[in-house]
Length: 193
Image 1: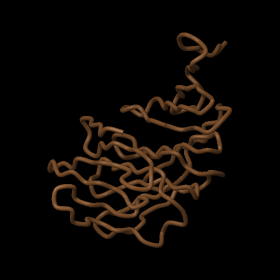
Image 2: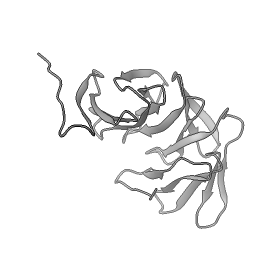
Image 3: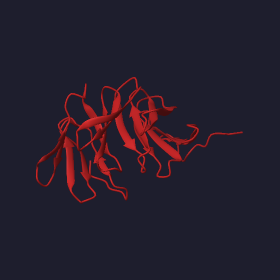
């Protein structure tokens, strides 16, 4: 999957497999590659290892996301746990546990305050990045949730699922704002009367 970028620091491309799983352009225009099951970060220009993560994983890393703070990295793994890492010390700062199956992806809000996780257990969860507290469990898909994104102003969350649908959620209430599937045209807005 090609690298993608955005205006916020920490934008990276994510492609889950056991070799290279993410590319990242740092604020100094360096390129880092995460691989080795998500356990190693290399500088793409020099080939030097930037960080190596050891025994904190009980299973494979399925996705990584660099945070707006370039010294932080999020990982999602098949043990159902997301982890927030300090890249300088290669230590886990916080874990986000509660899913009942593997995680497909992990994301961070643009301001770094919230973490989103998407799981094979058909839920997405929103977490407080500073405390690790669960903020919302988003339930509404019939199959695995494969992606979750938090809007730049943290007012909406969008999820996508293997059930071939997507849901836009109100961030504050965790109530669906609209949804769609590939069997229909356009968005469906729920009746709020």
